[in-house]
Amino acid sequence: MMEWTDRHCRFLHRRLTRHALLYTEMVTAEAIIRGDRARLLKFHSCEHPVALQLGGSEPDRLAQAARIGADMGYDEINLNVGCPSDRVQSGRFGACLMREPMLVADCVAAIRARVSVPVTVKCRIGVDDQDPEVALPTLVDACVAAGVTTFAVHARKAWLEGLSPKENREVPPLDYDLVYRLKREKPQLTIVLNGGVGTLDEVDTHIRHVDGVMMGRAAYQTPALLADVDARLFGGEARTIDEAVEDYIEYIGEQLAQGVPLNAMTRHMLGLFNGRPGARQFRRHLSENATKRGANVETLRTALSFLARDARVAA
Ligand SMILES: Cc1cc2nc3c(=O)[nH]c(=O)nc-3n(C[C@H](O)[C@H](O)[C@H](O)COP(=O)(O)O)c2cc1C
Image 1 (tube, rainbow, N blue to C red):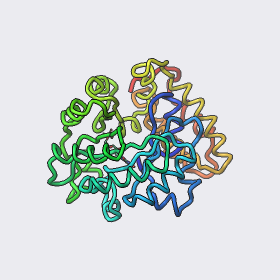
Image 2: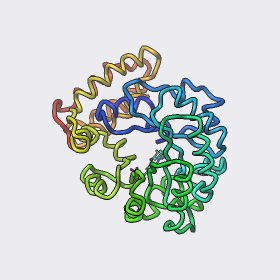
Image 3: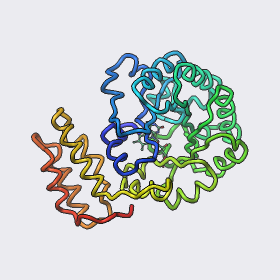
Image 4: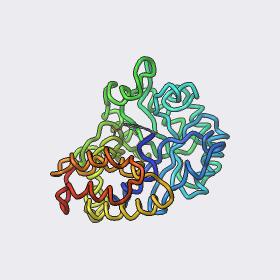
């Protein structure tokens, strides 16, 4: 998620769950080809499995960017066919590509020809006046013909005329049934459901109908829920929040030494202790102090001192 799931966020999330697949923010092919690759694509070796999400609609450029990402070690290349922002539409990529399934197919075919890691697609169920019953399977079929077998479907339309990106994540109604049906009708595909999933109980319900569930805002805003993911969904061990935080503090120390400001890392922790006594003071201390010159690990430790420690926190 743009501006949210940067490498610091992903490091923290990986300390909370070893098994969930993590995604980068969407990065445009042009940014990767022409921009500061090291800065855009750098990630920590602990982040695996981690998917690089690309934005774009020029097959050759996407293929070139994907190759760069795959060579850097990303485990999957995902093409964004779901982002509704104006900026993205004017560049002719994101959700507006729901109208151009053959172009999307050309893009994924070109990417697949250049990388050996899985190439996946994140899409909507349709845009504007499209009929999702037609638009979703049409896009999926075109991509399947190009060799894609995994789709993450944000189970609502994007209304490209008249809604802001934020409204486009809330206003168009969710149609989980359509995504369930996609899986039923194409059982050979890996179908991941996305949109409006707030708790692991909801994940348990969806997972009876699809192969996976992608959580966006809930994972970011209440990351403590990730600490239960391994035990509940992967047969692994639950992590404690406090263990994860200790690992993150060590990481923060290393990053501070490399000139990363404290707030760039602590901002991803603000929702971590929601519901725990002292959470508000924790957040306030960080909001007021983490951007100050010289803010360091002690600033974070002081914020943590407001919390009742050593509890496994339910999200
Ligand atoms: C701040 C923000 C940034 C986002 N950036 C991306 C992005 O870069 N790529 C993408 O596929 N979806 C992006 N999304 C959409 C989410 O991935 C997800 O599809 C959407 O929020 C619905 O899922 P949720 O209800 O679990 O959040 C973003 C969402 C938010 C809130």
